[in-house]
Length: 154
Image (cartoon, rainbow, N blue to C red; front, side, top):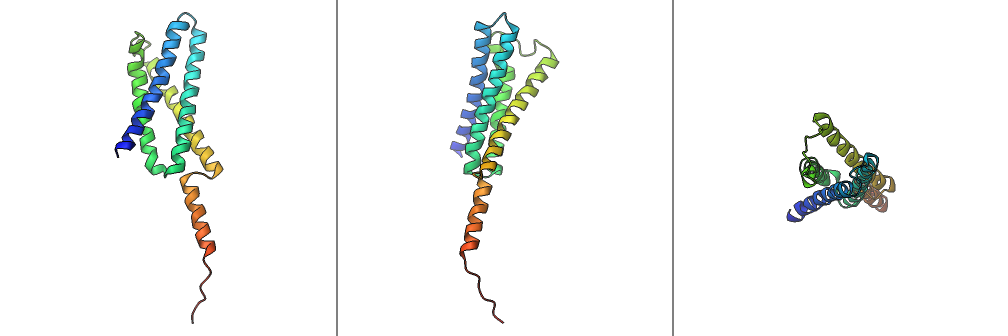
């Protein structure tokens, strides 16, 4: 159980660290250029999606979705709240400075990027047949085909 929470915390920390790096790059390198800042934000969302696709692919191989789905949702939720509420404070901004529309747009974009990453990782694992359920079905088919049929007694 301890390792389970550790992996959730590490994943949430990694996702938040990607956001912090993007905010610092935007603040110090592209403070006056909104187009470049938007590109850094896009790159951040792509990196977050790639990290989640990789983690989902690895976790899907090890265990069933019911086991890792909640862990992944918890890590994403923690990272999202930290990104939206704490991230702006690190660079000297107010999380609600842009108003409610900007705040909820950030939440929506974050959920979109993370959802796309998780879905991509799981679909790749399923398409390759390396996810947990596919492996169980493969072992079941091998066991059923290896046993000889028992003759019926009348």
